[in-house]
Length: 477
Image 1 (tube, rainbow, N blue to C red):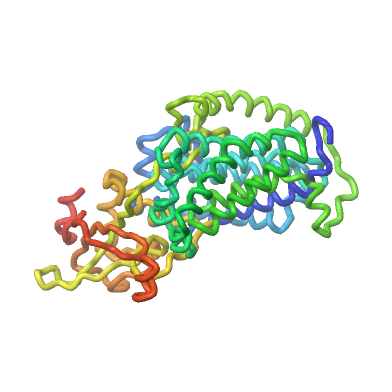
Image 2: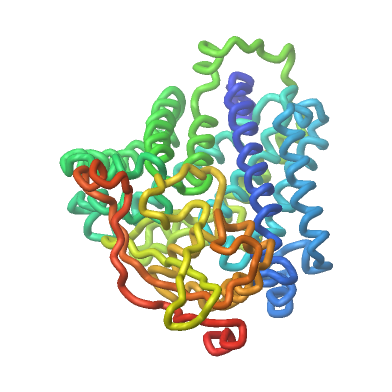
C-alpha cells in the first residue's frame, strides 16, 4: 500500500461494491413496486404537486425537467438493470471512465427519486445509500488498484455513521445512560422481526449487556476504524458483529445491512485472501488521472465534512441531516429516544355503514396487525407505508399530508394502493366505509404465548378516524 493505491484491498473493494449494488437493486425494486401508489400522478403525495413548490437547486432531480409515471418507471427499471450489471461483474470489465459513468448513473437516478420522495424517503438510510454509492464511483474496476484515499473515505463514512448514532443516544433518552432502553426497544421498534419476541423476553441483565455493547462499539471501538491496519480491520469486524445482531433482532430496511457492507469494506483485504479461494488480478493499474480524481474527491469530502462534524460536536445534534442538496456528506443517528409503549393503527372496512355493521381489518405486509401472526422478516427491503403507519401512531401529524388520501384510495379499492397491503377485507371490491382505530400492543408473556399461540396482546384505546364514506371523506381532509 502507498498513499494513493492499495493493491491488497482488491477483495475488500469487490465485497464492498457488490454489497452496495445489492442495496441499490433493492432500492430501485422497492421504488418500482411502491412508487406508483405513493408518488405517482394519482399517488398519495403526487410528485407533480411537489414539483410545483420545489426547485432544482433545493432538490436536484431529473424529474424537474419532466415528470410522468412512465418516466418514473423507466428510471426504476434503468437503475435495476445497472445494479444487476454491476452484480454480474460487467462493470468491472469496463474502462475506468465507463465504471465511473455507470456508478454515477446509479447515484444520479436514485438521487432523483429521493429528492422528490417527500415523507416516504425521509429516512437516514436513503442518504446513507447515496453517500456510499457516490464513493463507489471512485473505487475503480477490478483491473485498477483501489485508491487508498477513497478507502479511507469509506472508513470515514462508517465512523460518522456509527459515532453519530452513539452520540445521539448518549445525549438523548435517559434510558440509554441508565442502560434500560432495550427493556422496551425490541417491542416498540417500528417493525419487529421474527425473533424480536424472543429478544424482548431476554433477562433484563442481558438487555444491559446489549446496551453496553452498543455504547462500546459506537463510542469507543469506532475510533479504530480511522487507524491503520490491522486495527481498522478488527474494529470493522466488531461493527460487523453488532450490525449482524441488529439484523436478526429487527427490521430496519437496509440500514444495518448497508452498514455491515461498509464495515466489510474496511476489513483488511489480506484477510479475505487468506480464506477466499479467489486469484488476484494479474495486473492492477493506477492511472495518474484517476489518482488525481481521488485526491480531488478527498478534498471535496473534507470541505463538506465541516458541517457534519460541527453537528456531531453540538449539544443540539441533529439526526439524519443532509447539509448539501446532493447529499454527498451527511449526519446520521437513530433512536435518540425510545418509546415505552407501542401503539398501532388498525384500519377497518365495512360493506354496510349502519349501527349493526361488521368491521373487518386490512392486513399490512410488515407492521403488526393480527395478534397471532409472527412478525415477518422484510429487511433489507423497505416497506414505506408500514413505517409511516408507525409514525402516525406516535403522532397523527405524520399523516397530515397523506392519511385521508390513503383512506380515499381504500374506499375506491385502488389496485396500486391495495398492492401495498397484505390483504383487503373485500378483495378488489370497494367497501362502504372505513375507519382507523388506535390500539396499544405489547408482546405476550411466555405463559400467554403458550396458551394462545399469539405474539401480541392488544387493547383498544380510541377511534382515531371515525367511520367515513366517500361522500364524507372531505370532512377529514
